[in-house]
Image (tube, rainbow, N blue to C red):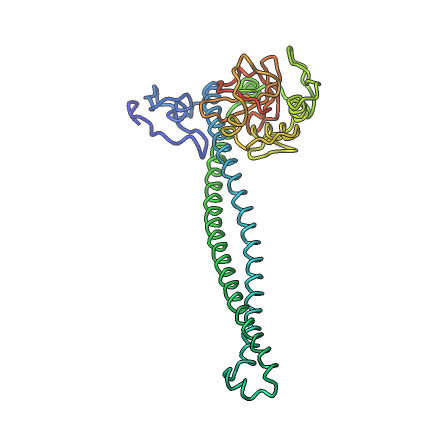
Length: 353
């Protein structure tokens, strides 16, 4: 093989890195470069290259997770609305059937009593006064007949409109479900690619990655408070913010699982939502909606309980606890933990209450 020939680039996801072109891509190179020598051995990516690519994959997976969370919230809402519409349609259908039955009974009664003309019935009646009373009843029955027809028509319209709304909600639900499936595929592909890259590191290198990854720090048993310099204790003033922070402390050590909202596991926005829910405050599901759920605060105004957001797409969130630190659920394979807010690119902060 000629030494000046460029090796063909191969994709990074879906399998191990097998070419120098793919290895260079880990560091963000746009194109492959020529190799010196004729060795056929696959060069091993450096820990720095793996870290760069795995961080990127995790960030993209988390962005897809937040999109999944948003689509799931909308799918759940569409499903609830569809269930409500179906139940209302069933009630209106029962009312329609009752109105139809009443109208049929009235029509049959009128037919039996009104088979002869009015003048003939009056002439043949043995008791004209009784007949006139019956005739008045028949007239009133005719009014009820008209009212019954109106009722049936109204019920028919109601059932038809409800069925049309239910059909629209069903189409919306199916669209959301397809969107969910797409986000799930993206998440799983990126996580698999990251796992394959990390598998190429030694145990020591993986431990170093864990310690140096964005938002990373030493893990701790669930519910414990790591002994770190400058780590503030949970506030005890009984405020909503204090209760939210106390919940976040109790979640330390629990695993990150994308799409999870507790109690045994969390993703980043699932943790902050659950923390504030424990304090009686309802937050929306995703990072990009949570940032607008409260009053925006600047970095120098942060207080315990504030939501702190990261990355340009607002794809990660943690709960500020004071002294420049937060509690957050970093990424798959990690646990809820303490971390400095300086460990990731800052995007903003908000105060839910």
